[in-house]
Length: 353
Image 1 (cartoon, rainbow, N blue to C red):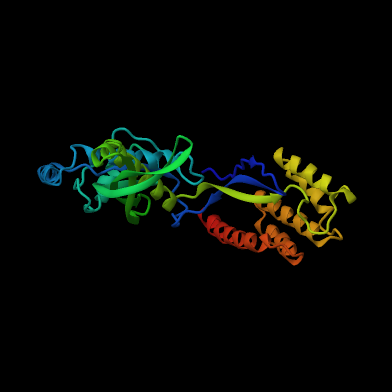
Image 2: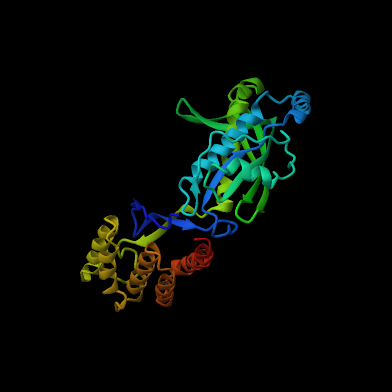
């Protein structure tokens, strides 16, 4: 089991006193999966069995659905989940090329796979659970959204032109079950409904329609997104957090930057942050947190809170941001809400990891 956090830092320098930092953290899954489940295998069961093939083909003909479209979408959905699981801090994905299961071939949940069959198909694999795509279905609709005005520049002047707008709306349904092989229990059963819309414009309805992505491409995008959403449901996952911090002491009313070297210290600390030297940065900010100017102290405390959060010390970050608020920080109140949310998420994460 992988239990680690890797932080990546990217800086977007602004022209004022504030810069933005982005770092990676782990967010808990939507649901808790039992601790004994570490090695998992993903299996597709969305293809129709022999007894359902005729009905499935007839339904496709009546609905005008392209042949093989749902099979293609299910494959993308499976791949999205498998790819995401390779980066999971909780699960180890076990690959398989031989297991094939049949279901209804429609959006309907089939009866659960018999445990005798589960045991048989997994006997050659060291796995704790099977994640099965029990059913997959897609539907689509092309809509004429009418005329929309657009502004374009022509001969140095802005003019309004009329464009036809067309959308391709795609919905996919993916039904999942997780089979706990050890305890012979189904520990999760979930159906996802995911929608994506693609808009294009043209000088006529037909010209706009020609610009729409192919149905296979649109269903692929929606199906891939659906697979990712199920991953977020069952596994802790990496997210990117964006935070602001103070790089200098500009825009403080009544404070003269050139009166002392405190601003230079802030700039030096900012350079250390850019080099991922949080220890060096905090050594500088710590000297300024009790500055005679409350706003200077507020910014130093604010930055100390960020350094603590970036290093996973959320409770300490909350203590520092409260100090920043006491010195008059307006940004601190918003940041405090975010930190409390992270503390709550971390408690859930500890249970899952």
